[in-house]
Figure 1 (cartoon, rainbow, N blue to C red):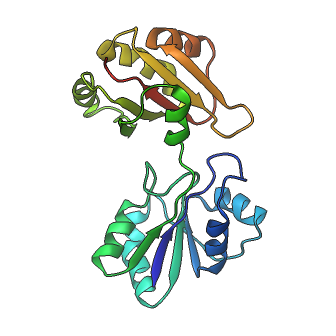
Figure 2: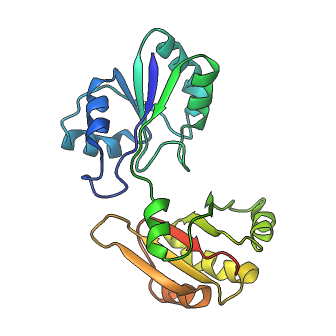
Length: 222
């Protein structure tokens, strides 16, 4: 009995390790956030294993059953739509339950969006803070107030339709002149990196509404 956490490509299907492919072909069951999305990757690499749904809307309901199946000796792999499971994706509850029940857990190294975004920013990144998606309402102001004196680079994830609004909001807490790097569609055909002040980049995306996955890297306070 064992659970593998398998990072999957964030865009380019070639960004998966040989070991990840081998393990996906060996496990008994693959847990997928969206079976339709995951099927594209699995078909590309001729991986034919049972796909079970595991996502943020059902993780509490299926948790006990998954632990019971693992105790029966099954070996499972958890994948998400893109990147490493449990980083702004489902996975934490299952990992914790496995550890509490004596079930081995192994996370493979692999793709995740914030690392290339940090490197591409050109900001000092020997130390950084990962915040993921900001709270939509409750706690948002409190969190941003806590971060406004942060001297380390700060990483946020954001949806494309909220990007310009969020960049404008960040100016209230960090100042219009604070440098920011917005990375869009990492590893994909239309990969884009925009670096400048919060004011400049907010104005750019107000005039050019973006599409795709977004990572915001905010330079730390000088």
